[in-house]
Length: 406
Image 1 (cartoon, rainbow, N blue to C red):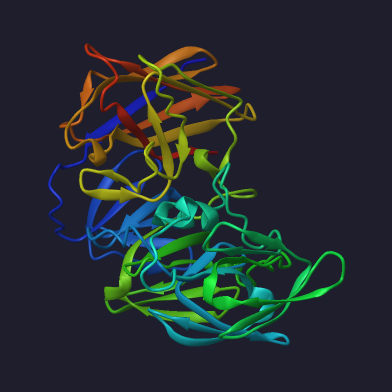
Image 2: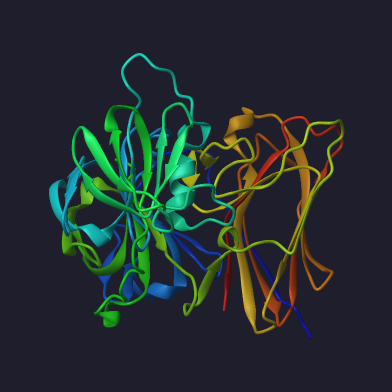
C-alpha cells in the first residue's frame, strides 16, 4: 500500500485578519475574502466547495471569553451564554446574552450554570474555564460534566443532590423530586450547576441543508445546526430547538463541522484512545486533555483558538483504533501560546506502526503546521510527542483540529 503524505503551508504567526479563513479537510488553508453559501456548499475565493470538505471557517480573530459565568446547555449539542430564568410545566424561559429572551420547551434544556454569589471566589474548577463548558457541549471524551444525561443540582460548596426530575425551577427555588420520591426544596442562590436528563434531540428535518455545523459566536455561544444561508449580512441556521434563526454576521466567531456517527468526519477528541502514555522527565504528570490545552486552558495557536483538538505534554503517546476503511488524518499542530514561547518538541504520526510524518524541532516561537495525511486503510493511528534537545519544560503541544475524515 502506498501512503501519500501531504503537509501544507504554515499558518501565519500574525493575527491580522484580511477576511474569512477556511481550513479544508485535505489540508489547505484558504483566505476566502467574504465566504458565503449554505445548503451544503460554500463559495470560497470564487469557487464552490462542498460543505463536508470544509473543516472550519473563522470569521474573526477575536477569541470568545475564556471564562463564562452563566449559560444554558441545550440538548443536541448547543450552549447559550445567558441564564435559565425558569421552568414551569413543559415550558422554559431563557435569557440569552446574544439572542435575547427565548421561549423554549422544557425538554430542550439539558442544564444550566450560574455565577457565584457576589464576593465569593470560584471554587468549582470544572466550571472555572470556558474549555470545560466547551467540552461538555461538544461531548468530548472524558468530560466531567454530563448535561442532558442525569439530574443533578450542585452547590457552590461542591455539595450536590441527585434527583429524578426537576419539578419546577424559579428565580429563587428549585423543586426536585429525589430518588426516594420525596420532594426537596432547594434555595437557588447557592446553586452553581444544574444538569437535567432530557430525551435525545430529534434529527434535523431538513437534511438537504447539508451537514451539521457548530457555530461559535463572539459571546461564547455554541449553536448546532445546518446552515441554510450565509451572505455578507447574516447567517441563517436551522436548529432543533428554535427552528430557523438569523444571526448577524458581526456576531460570528467561527463555525466547524459537528462530525460524529453517520458523517464523513470524526473528531479525535470525541474518541477514547486505546492507549495513552505520558512519560515525564521528573515526577509531574500531565495527562492529555480533550478540546483544551494540557493546562486546561482554551487551545491557542498563533493567536487563534482551536475549539477541537487534544492538548498533550512531552513525552506523550496516544493511540486510536480505526475501522480499517480508507481515511485521512488532519491536524493543525504546534506548541500552545500558554507557554509564552517556551518549549521544544518533535512530533510524529504513525499508521499501523509505520511513521507517516515527523516534524522538525518545534519550538514555542514557531508557527503551527497544518498536516494532512492519507492513512490508507490503517487500523491504528498513533500520535507521539517527544522531547527535543532539552528537558520537557514548556512542552505543551496541541494536536489542534485533530480529526479523521472518511
